[in-house]
Amino acid sequence: MTTRTAHEPYLETHQTHPGPITPYERKLAGSLTEIYSGGVDTLDGVVAGLNTLGLHGPDGGPWTTENFRAEMRRLGN
Image (cartoon, rainbow, N blue to C red; front, side, top):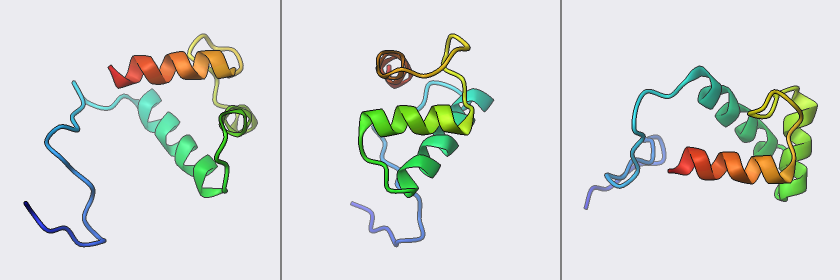
């Protein structure tokens, strides 16, 4: 087991991404980081935060709890 410091990124061998991170994924990740950093911790709050930031859902429309869950499932596979 490797010891990490607080300044090193959290990397584990089982945490992989199938390819390069797309600009969409990078923007979504940044938006989620901003939302969570603001203290939001509910699904409704995350969805509202994405819509407030102006980030469109995967279909080009507003985020809903349903399409957020579906998109997280898709990205997690």
